[in-house]
Image (tube, rainbow, N blue to C red; front, top):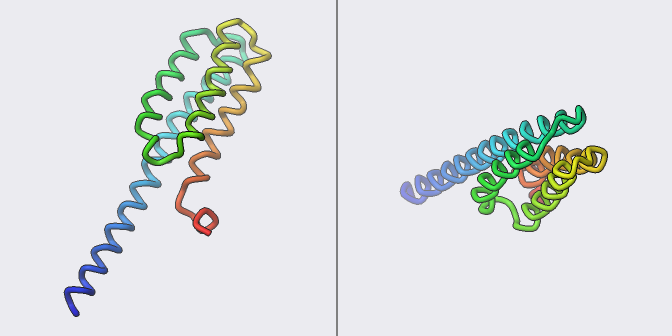
Amino acid sequence: MVKSISYTLAAIALCVGLFIFYEWYLNKQFTEFSDAVETLYEKTENRTANREDGYAVKTMWADKKAKLNVFIPHNDISYVDYWLSEACGHIYAGDYEGALPKVEVLREISVNLPHAYSIRLENVF
């Protein structure tokens, strides 16, 4: 009886620990990505963004998505890839008016995507 209770409590503690780590890790990754996208947005808005700026954000995202594949479905990761490629293509061409809405979408995604997969009551039920 005591063994069962202690095993149950250990399993609950392990699950709570994993949930806390999951929330912390997901928020950390998207906070860093969001900051990079915000910088890219400001540079695009000021018409100072260049190919290297877009490439830096793409490189950061490539590193993060390799680790986030465990936590987030591949479709959502592909969605970020799509908008990032679109934005970088416009920036590369010097089309800042075309790039700005794409980077704006990335801003929203980087804020909303981690909330969609966080452990909250509305996401569980």
